[in-house]
Structures are given as C-alpha cells and as structure tokens.
Image (cartoon, rainbow, N blue to C red):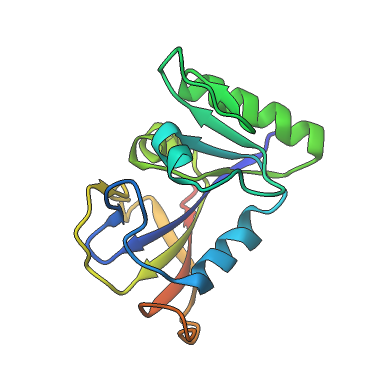
Length: 171
C-alpha cells in the first residue's frame, strides 16, 4: 500500500509560517487540530523545525531531514535527503498500518515534497506577522478547496482562523 502524503500547516495571510524558528502566534485550537490530524502517523520535518519543538511529539514517529552528517535527533529518525526521509516514513507507516504520512515543514521540506502532496490541511491564521519562513505558493490550477470551517475563536487564541482542506486536482 502506498501511503498518501498530506500537509498539515498553519499559514498567516502573508504566507508566514515562522519567525526566528518559532510560530509567531498562539492559537491553541489549531494545535489541538494539528494533533488530531497527525496522531499515529509518521511526520517528516526539517532540522530547524525539530529544534523548535520542546520535546518529541507523542504517538508520532518523526523523521527529521538534515544534510548535516553530524546531526542526531534523540527520539526521532534522521534522514540525509528528502528521498531517504520519505522512504523511512513509508517503512514506518507500513509497519504501523498508517494510511497517511504528514509533511510538517519547514519551507524547504514543503518544497521538497510539494509535487507528491495529495492533500493540504491548512489553517488560515487571520494575522500578518513578520516572519522569515513562508509556505510555498500553491498553484490554484492544481488545487481545489473541498472543505472550509471557521470555528469560534477560543479564549486563549490570539487570532481568528479557518480550517481549509485543499485536494490536488486530478487529470
């Protein structure tokens, strides 16, 4: 079985996904959504994204892609290329019966897998923060919006947001 490659990402209006190796907003409702969408699935991320985590994420096998031969990640699998990362994630997914592999960023990781992604679970954050990491622009001719929800803003959420699902167009 070939697992489906998906993206789970929160993006500000101006395309920002990060600033100084952190998320430049606090939206706990989106963090809960991320957890639900990634639970039990392999997660491919880059070295800087790994370093921004406070700890390994529970019930997710993380594959960190880094070209640095001396890089090690306690609690994660390390791959030296995007191809090696995908192969490792596929082995993990097959062993656990996961039908999806999550591509979790940052920018270079999204770009490396963009042609293979089938679904994007996008949280649109209604802010325009300063940032130094951006989500790649998606060609609207290649993607179709299949779902949109604007949940109520939680008491600790710093911004309004929408959950959007984009599917790659076929044919």
